Image (cartoon, rainbow, N blue to C red; front, side, top):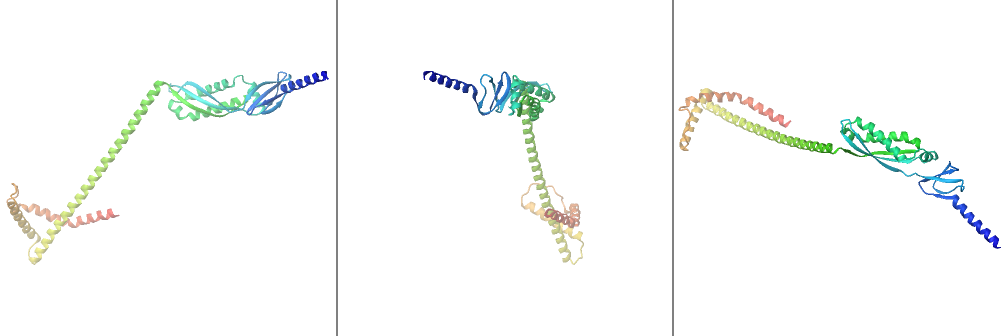
Length: 314
């Protein structure tokens, strides 16, 4: 009985050791490479897995999560400006047996290989661009990096989600010059806006002045028409009173002589300072001729004003 008990104990211990060596657990988003006698045998996925003790061995683990790799590259642009460009690439192992196997065996250091391809891609793209174009075309640079990485790294079991140009850092002197240029541009834009505002104010003032003069001119024109109409009516009334025995010219002479004496009388009554004027009404003939000419133009002036009013209403 004692021998059987010892045998059973050894059997149980042996069974436990066997199970411990043959059973293994693989975590989520992990893959395990199993080799048999030194050669690749299989890929084990997440869960409880079995292998033959001693014959089968776990060679390594492969991470199936999406990973990020920042890469900093220093290069020179077409206009001879040194820049530091930081690129972040997102990549993952292709989740197939072939992809997992290739990612494990083909490259000793896949991150370093990815960095090398990023270096090569940036140093082939950026030297063809000027600094301003590098800032403007960073999406194009990122797409070129992703295209090259996807085309070359898939044979090693890796694929890429995205490449991002996260930072573009020119030389310190260049950054200082760029800040000065940007400040000058902002000042130029501000001066331009101020000049435009001043121009608008000047134009508005000129338009207001022109409108004021136009209205004043219309007022003077209406005043002159009223005066001329008054003279015309006075002439007609005198002629009717004289039963058309006098000419319009005689009536005008009489009116001007009367106006002349009335004006002189009023100036004397108001203690007005010295005023130079014709000593007799004979010299008002020129004014008479001007008034007569204006009487002939009354109708034309009315027509012009009527047309102007109709134009405004339209």
